[in-house]
Length: 373
Image 1 (cartoon, helix red, strand yellow):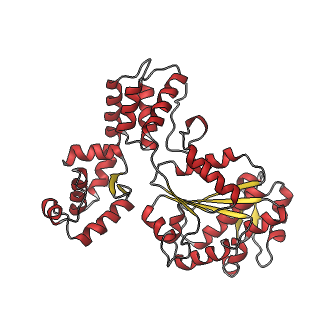
Image 2 (cartoon, one colour):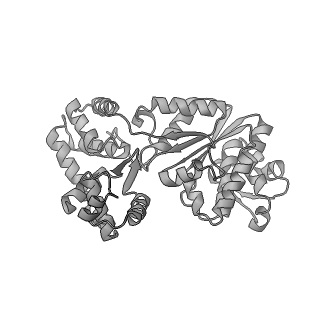
Image 3 (cartoon, helix red, strand yellow):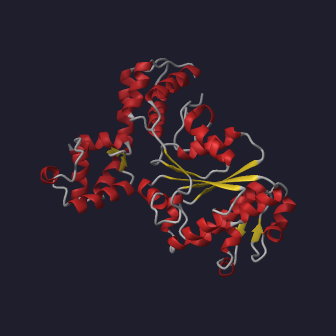
């Protein structure tokens, strides 16, 4: 029997937990044509949330295009993938793919190729010297198609903040906003995991994407929902776990979606009939041991002041820039502390939310406490 818990990939259907309020909010934006900006730390389930909201909307007149810019390092890759994913979703017949270059482009002549199934292996390429002079035509492609086909399109772009890593990103953002703000039949759902970078793009008046859409800061799932999900998943697979142990799993994993699912999976695999507190603790130790080498490598790549900052935060110090904290923990000047907090956030070790400093990986936190406190 397959495990009823899933982590590391998109989560949907029976693996998906609650998020009814967030799904409803997203779907209202999709229906209304409003833009959405969604921010959450990595592995909190934002990609699964957007995918699930789109799937449950069940409106044949709305087409969803999904694009992940995580690995993009230049403009050309972005524009080619942007065009490619739009055509995959909006073209319904092979002959449409063949004619797409003439039908939807005037200044540009993209090269479209595929072997057997264009809906799976379509490849789009440009003469970049030519395409760089017709960026507007590419960016307006979803609106052009939506108008001709009399449909609505929602562009869902994951890890949107990574566009800032592309050379000349400031001008790229200007071009994107200039085109996208004109679209009447296309809306945009832009989401990312780097909070400081996303807020810098969308929450600064000097930036072109300031107040671009409905800003959603994703929260963790409440403990009660986790208890219900975990106990239900065990029951569904003819195993048993009591609410107390399910609550303990969620507590240990700090209600973090990825790690609750991971620990629940380990407990489920280790349980023949009924999960016990001893089994839960054995699985916690197993997860920590399995990642100990990775955790040690991460710590070895940190400076002394960064380690000391983590020690201070692990000890519950809230005002790390106070003279007392600086003296007791040797964490450098206030300016160094700000830089180190940014570095630790970029390394996905810490997340700063609502004034709190949180370890992204709860098992890393347990390992760190055992080895450094």
